[in-house]
Image 1 (cartoon, rainbow, N blue to C red):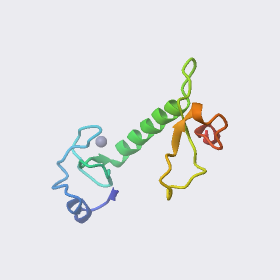
Image 2 (cartoon, helix red, strand yellow):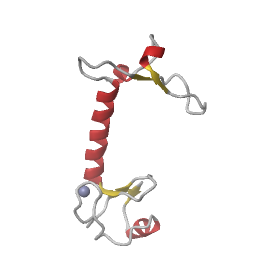
Image 3 (cartoon, protein in one colour):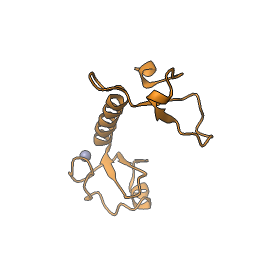
Image 4 (tube, protein in one colour):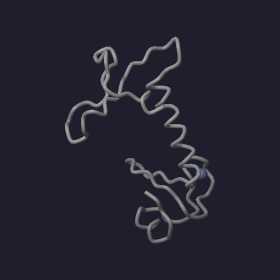
Amino acid sequence: MLIVNDEQRRRVGIVSLSKRCSYCTKPLAAYPLIVSDEASLQVYHAACAAALATEVLVDLFTFFSPPAPYERLFVCDFSRTLATEANLCDFASSRPNPTLSLETWA
Ligand SMILES: [Zn+2]
């Protein structure tokens, strides 16, 4: 969630801008801020949230497309919708011809 003013900050439970960023540990100090929707309250400078998201994307890409000699364990199948209760990530070995994988998006 993007936080751009004091009212929004207080509404999500951040008492002051002296709270520290969950990524760089420096005081929040100024807007904009990003608050995650995890079980525990995590708040980030917008630039730190972008850095964290980039790290997660890189890690996810490596997870779904590991470098040799590692083999891919999972394939994301986006042909099914989130409305179903189907498991969207299956073991690659159980789906020899995936309809869509992250490599398609790279
Ligand atoms: Zn930060």
